[in-house]
Length: 160
Length: 399
Image (cartoon, rainbow over all chains, first blue to last red; front, side, top):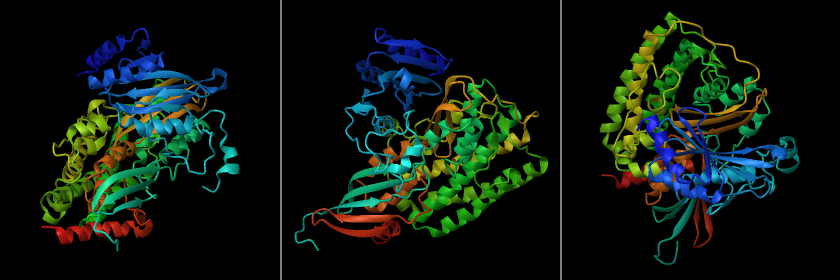
């Protein structure tokens, strides 16, 4: 499949959820899909996976800051040279996203990282142990949140 | 000695020191007799918070920070970052700069693969191959030093181009070095595919089918040895790979032997490509200027590092610093796949299976803990002892 065929195929899949998504084309080889209903995320991923577009490159968390009071989670699928970005927004406090690990096993490590770094809860994730942060890291402190100041770290976990 | 003859399960932790990743790893294997029944991984022992640190540094400072993510493939990280920033600024580095970037990237691949073949040979107890391949690796290290002034962290990139040119004398010394390395690579390919002692440790071991590799998200030579067509130099050419295409090296067998062959055969492509670029180095500038503030936007850059796909996400809010920078290295993808692969294998195969994805196991002496879960007693082993266990196991049980 060439770039255009992949984009067309992906768009066709996502169209089945047109009531839950908003699609844009920031670049010729990129398809941005805002998933507005969180519970549709896993079904869309299954749809992509079935058509062999399910190579999950990375899951990126972005803290949009206290003003926006939201976090964004990007799921980047990269078949060939195409980028399919599923984007979801969750509240900064107690944000929750469903786990993709049942559909894509390699999602597990990305989701554990997302939880550790941003405090986003992942429902359905079997292994919720820490992957990167030390055991002595204080509970409820999420280093990639915009209001986390690394200088405050010396008080807590300096030894590790 | 246990009182009954019932099989005893041991838990064997390996790690945490693990210098090749963005983060060192700790592995824990549970064994039933000699067979691995479960595997577990814990990372983060050297998590340096680079993604957070990048948000607090200027675009230019970050170039130096990013280059230090990895000591082996430093150039590919710096290149990914530069391409991302150039994308956001809607600037393209001149063709000559792109060609020089590609030459350094391929020299880096040669040095990395030679490093790896030495490490894996050492894990298998094949010290002669280890010594020879690392001696030969000095040739490519010298070429990199001659070109950039540095053996590691070459610092070849600028935002918008490269720092140095390649002159005729340098091109000639690279050609000469490549001739020697090519001859050696041919010899090593012969050794790894014909030496019966070595084949005993690689043939049919750690087999990953094409479907498994795809589902578990394996990348780079590990994926290509399982016949998964993933090579970004071919799929989504960047830098000079569009003008100077490479052939993807694939293998259908999916075992350790295939992973060895794919890496060595890839080297011939690297030799060919570097010569081709040196013969037809485009004329022109080495760099273009970039603004201090980078326009707002998001970009994803994916490059083929020696170990597989490296992924960068960079978001700019229009300031003099990045808003968010995310790095995903190939080892995390391969590690999660290989850890599943270890289940069902002999404990003696674990060092080779782990080394097979090229996570660079050489630098540290690792503590290995053998725990008898039934009697709740503990026995300590070093990584060296586990490696020796593998060698002895095959020495006494081999054909």
